Image (cartoon, rainbow, N blue to C red; front, side):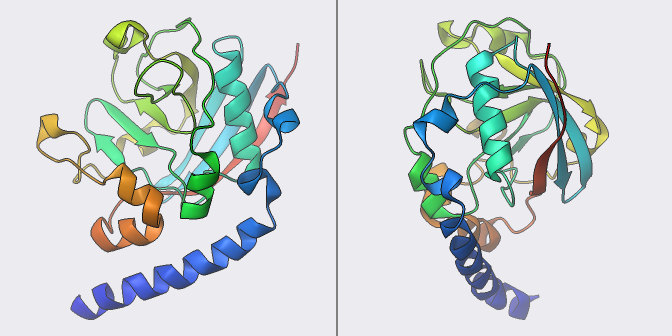
Length: 225
């Protein structure tokens, strides 16, 4: 076990360098254009996420949160969530992700928030919403409700509008590793978001090696009215 731990940072540093080279060619991630960001997504679409525990499918519903769904569509189509870790897993509450594997990508998306929208659908089990720390701070981080969390509909006076829901593979989501927690309430503070932004997956591999993660996230089906 000790030799594996010594090698892990080197292996992930090498992988990060390779991914950074790939990202340099993926202009939509490092330099997203205002025109592309403002483009409307399909009315509904399915995103198949291949995770370390198996696949699950999120169905986005634009009528629930147009700005939120448009951003989600752009991020998925650009490969933003590939290799991202589920860095906050609180049993019976939420699974959260959305900080990218590479610091350069995190820096490119810092401050690219989307405007608030009303809560049109409740945060029931399986529903997907953006995380945020105050008004007009939704950006790239998402969470899946592991239980009916209706209190999140009006938390702090602004709530968390769902953008879609898991329609296949909820058992996979339930199985994500929760040993690191992610909140002070369960006495497991989990990974530091500041450190994830600064070091990406190199930090997470070193300090939280058993986190589950997204291999790929792809749009597999879409509908328009």
